[in-house]
Image 1 (tube, rainbow, N blue to C red):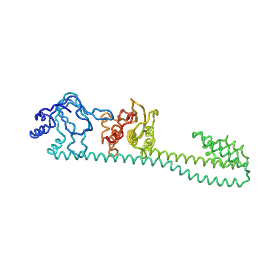
Image 2: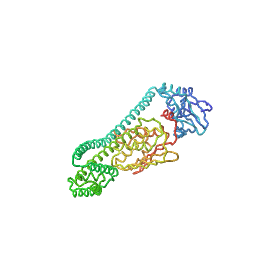
Image 3: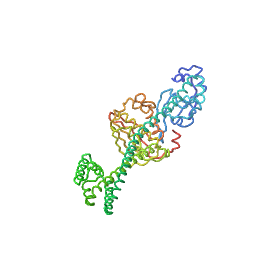
Length: 482
């Protein structure tokens, strides 16, 4: 700020709420240590510069703003006499970086009382030593408390995800274990049946025919269509009747396996036409072992694929083997988070995905965006009390990528809507929330990614909207800002 230096008037200082209880000696010291300056419309100081002065408004209008990406977002505009800004944390000394935390400009000719940061710090320590100690304790205590609770929030989220992942992994792992045990029995039965076949009065041509039928059966299994319970029951009756008509015992035990594999009585007729009648029962039982082993191997493959998919989702979610800043597909991040949270979301919440797959990949910190998705999904499920519809939607809006999380819960009351992004503010019962989830999300989206996070709510329709830039920013600068 450049402007004329004016005479300091102690009486004018006393008229300000900040100095009204000071003694004449203290007012005289302020006038001696500081100065009054006139300022023309324009900038006074810039965010990030060294904080050298403490400003008190005498008259005029000031506007303070914060830098978000390439934009200056207005924080406050006031003409109230006595409002202060600038180096008001100078009393903390070199315990914290002494930088301006916002930018300030004046919109009309204004006047300030100005103290250098060093003089302001010295006066505070001389006049209010106990207050300085209390303010230091409040500042550092609050910062430490926020760090501890923030870490606790992350640990709670990690524990919840670990429990959900363990539950999700247990089901396919147990299925694979059961299928492996059953497969071992079926293979042993096949070895026994093979011994009987090779030791019996069968020609080489008969065995060749069985092998051919076996190969065709395997091909049919791969193309089998899933039947409804009623269709499967009717088909099992028809296959069992065919087996009984051809004097093959235990038809009711064999029929479900054939039906599951997509082998009907017409196919069995083809088997009967391909082999001699005395070979038919052995052929059918041999095929039953073949079908069972193939189905069990399919079950094992499906189970292990699910395990592999969950592991990949966990790796995608955690981003442990990825660079912290990279170009990512938002839909992959959303899918991995939804998969990781499947157990917590529960069966009574319907998840609807409306993804615009024409959206480009964007530069981002994927691990931290996954934390945002986790917080917003967790809040939505909690708001619906585990019953309702969660819609996750992606779109483009004025050159930005948009992610909406919409739930059918009771909504956020208007009187608290402006406070939900404040640190430690929570509507959850005591012990169930730290009040940092939305604060952390806001800082990740706004401070880290230069985006925007807001909420629109009415009963039955609450939507948290995340807007992210499509173009790259400097990750080094972002890290420093964080």
